[in-house]
Each structure stands twice: as C-alpha cells, then as structure tokens.
Image (cartoon, rainbow, N blue to C red):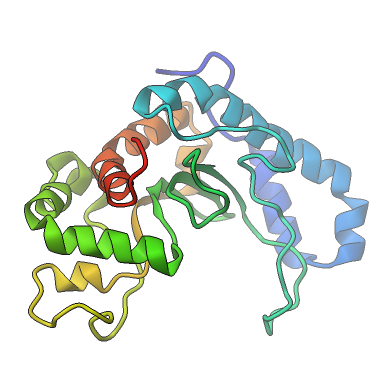
Length: 232
C-alpha cells in the first residue's frame, strides 16, 4: 500500500545527520535548529502520518502519533547523566509506534531508525521491566509449541533471519537450565529487526518495505501481547 503522501526519506535528512556527527555540540545545533526541523522532524512527521492507517490494519492497538512532544518521534537530546559520552545529541533519527497500553520506549512496538550509513526497522520489545520480561519468559516456558510457531514462521525467518536481543549468560532466576528454548528465555529484549543500506530509505519502495516488514513481525508481536495480556 504505497502512501500518496510519503514514499521515502530525502538526502537532506542524511546530510544533517552526517553534519551533526561532526558538530555534536549545543552551539552548532542551536544555529541549525531550523534545519533540524526541516530535514528531520517534518519528514518523520510525514512518515508517521502516512503509516497511521496501514499500521492500524496490522494492529489497531499500536499508536502512530506525529506530535513532536509526546508522540512517536524519539527526542534527539541524549540523557548524559550516567554516561561517559557527554555529546548532547543522538546521531540518528527514530520513531517508535508503541502499544496503546505502554508508556515509554520499553513497551512493545514497531520501530524505525535512520543513521548516516544504514537504516533498520521491525518490531518487538526492548529491555522491558522485570514483571513484563518474566511474563514473556514464562509464556515461552509454558507454551513451547506456541513459541516454536513464532521462531519457525517462514515469513519471519525470510525477512529477519531470527529473533534477536541481548542475553544473560546464565538462566534467569526461577528457570531451570534444562528448560526448552532456554537461549531465548535468557534474552533481555525480544525483537525482529531488518537492517538495510540508506539507499533503500531513499528509494520509492521504502514505505511499502517498512509496512511489509512490520507485517512480518506480527507473530512475535502477537506472542508478546498474549504474554503480557494486552490485545493485538
């Protein structure tokens, strides 16, 4: 379903990110704030507005909100309080279509991320809080056949290869070392992500490819929703 209002991102977005990498400081950003809005914010808003209706056909419970504050666009400002890296700005552009029941980036959602040399997009849940993470792990343990249907889904494998996410080195508390699918249970995040070169994001095929990729992630998204008892 090609959108009549959006198909791809333009060169100025990636040019801005490249320049920001070389000038990641407050003085430069303030001088280029209007450029940031034109090159980054407005195209992201166009993308989000365009995907609202087709995303609702994948699942009506994921929110595509083009507002700058409180919407689907990630803030460009980095939280440097606990980081050795004190550069003030993120050197990528991104948006997150989180579940209506979620409150932040740790909720299940569909994601889209743009860098100077690559883009990636897909769906899942990133570092969920302990109670949510336990429910996902417990459903894998209690419903192994259902989990196997996810990880063996042909479309999911064709598009993403496999489910990904950083893992613990040891079994989580309460899970035996002989539990089936232990390597998946050890994950701290669960996501299906597709990485592509920037040329795809700048091609007319991009919007349709993102939507096709979100659809391919639905077996994982449906499993996560069942695990945490929210509708898909």
